[in-house]
Image 1 (tube, one colour):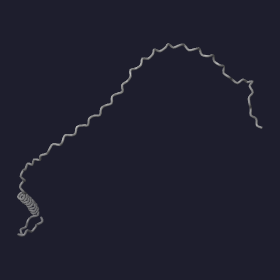
Image 2 (cartoon, helix red, strand yellow; image 1 turned 180 degrees about the vertical axis):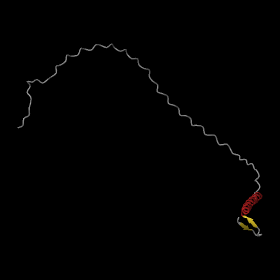
Image 3 (cartoon, rainbow, N blue to C red; image 1 turned 45 degrees about the vertical axis):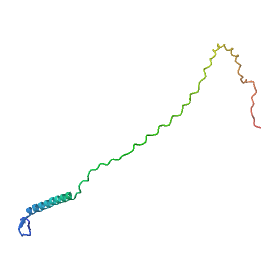
Image 4 (cartoon, helix red, strand yellow; image 1 turned 120 degrees about the horizontal axis):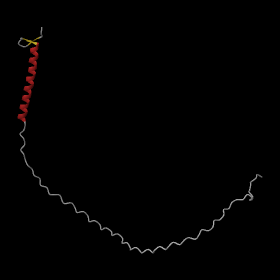
Length: 118
């Protein structure tokens, strides 16, 4: 047997109907509250401010100062004209090299020094 809820009028309401009734009641209260809130907020809204146009006069900024004049560039040193170069003299042949000197070598007859303990 379905659950039966008792209303204030003591009329039995089936459980399925009670869920539908409560859901409908909650939705209608929510919608009603939203509508009232929206209507009240629209009534309390201040009128939009009048459009005003303000013009601010400004003087133009002063022109930038002119760039400083460039210092005069030093003139490059003047080069003296090149002196003429004398013609090269013909190359004289070199004298023949001196005869080679014999190398000094030790001869077996030369005495050799030997240190002996004393």
